[in-house]
Amino acid sequence: MAERFDVVVVGAGPAGATAALVAARAGLSVCLLERGPFPGSKNMYGGVIYGRILDQVLPGWFDEAPVQRWITRRSTMVTTDDQALTIDFRNGAWSRAPYNGATAFRADFDGWLAGKAEEAGATLVCATTATGLLRGGDGRVVGVRTDRPDGDIEAGLVIAADGVNSFLAKEAGLYPHFSAEHITLGAKEVLHLGRDEIDRRFGLRDLEGLDIEMLGCTQGIAGGGFLYTNLESIAVGVVLSVTGLARSGLRPEQVIAGMKQHPAIAPYVEGGELVEYSAHLIPEGGYRVMAELAGDGLLVTGDAAGLCLAAGLWLEGVNFAIGSGLAAAQTAVEALAAGDTSAAGLAGYRRRLERSFVLQDHRKLRRAPDLLLSDRVQRLYPQLTCDVAEGIFTVENPSRKRGLARVALDAVRRSPVRVRDLARDSLTMLRSYG
Amino acid sequence: MSRRWGGPSFEDRMATVDFRVAPTAHITVDSDVCRSCTTKACVTACPANLFVPTSDGGVLFNYEQCFECGTCYLVCDEAGALTWTYPEGGHGVVLRRS
View 1 (spheres, chains in turn purple, orange):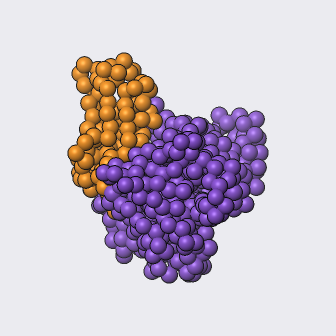
View 2 (cartoon, each protein chain N blue to C red; view 1 turned 60 degrees about the horizontal axis):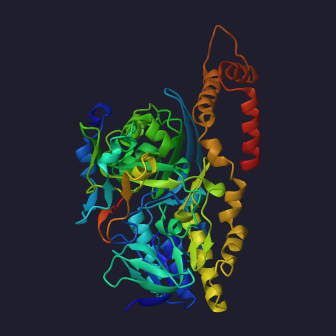
View 3 (cartoon, rainbow over the protein chains, first blue to last red; view 1 turned 45 degrees about the horizontal axis):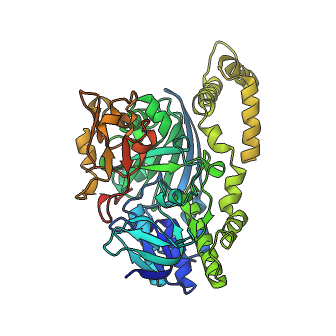
């Protein structure tokens, strides 16, 4: 006999756990399905959680969330083969409540959040893969099939939080633009260094943490690199355009190895002992290619909807997952009360997201993903930027100083960047980031 | 194979990851179709190095140490060569520090 719930949420990551928590709190019967043996066991990221949205769901969350370190140093590094220009911002306030960003192991964090959903009354069912959608006579989604014996679960509404590959959104026909062109592969090494060594090496104390995002260290493959601190280990990895990786003929761990040999990175990772290697896809296409958010009886959230924000300066996903899970649950409560879970009845989901940072940020930054993966941003601008820095800081006596404008002009003249492209990209950046 | 690039051997790298191997494969490869594939991008792009070209132009694979990322089906150029689903519940990769 099939079990029946008001809502079945597929995937106990941040989107699904938040949706389950909020729906259960509102009095709905909720089943939270997780295919891994425990929440977070399939999850990997690159890797800062910006938890401000949790203030609305779990006030005071930062006093109990299983965090590794609080980010107090945020660096953006632009590299060429032999150069690196880093903007390094430190903020002491970020080491105190209410904090800003945190590093965490997803097995810990996702498990904690799913536990909150359970406390609110949701039924967490692990080690169970949703294998497809259950359809009613009129074609609308009325539940999910699972790989358990007699595993059909009927529900008034299904919330797909099944991650970047979202087989459910695709099966429902809600992800027409899903394509390798908009997906990157993240590959990451967790290297043990010990707490004291990390504090010394990165100039940190207590639970302070560092996050470095890098551009131009991926051997010509569009993407970037990252390095951040856990309590006792650092995580270092690359994010690579899947199609670019395929064309390059390089292996992901080779690209990581190359990055780790960069003169600006090598001293940071030296002596680290590999304790876990992992890889995961990231939906980076943003606003223009994301999934349709609602179908008849179905809402799509988090990575499953392509809601990761990959905008260079800002690389965020967990917060967008939580924000969308929250909106999905609020919509579910409303739609079930009104007795209309058709796509039209669920239209409030999109309206909610349009009023929240989730779609406001995505719409504003809709041009960013293409720009960031362009050869100019990946290769030419890093070279140009580093050449300007080199020109400024190289003392060429007996020649006199050239002056900043002259240095910049010389660098632009030497660069293969076309002024027309530079002007156009500057405008795009202004429209996106301004 | 990655010695040249420094760091641990690929076997040691994968030995850091916990896999609860399912009794049945969640990936299938039709090696006959692979024979007509000129890129065989799965062979290099798969982060777990699960795909191995054979001397007769096909592709051998194993599913046991799969990260379940999906890169293989995204880079696969040949229609019908590769199917990919999630392994059965409770099986496959188990990450703890990622």
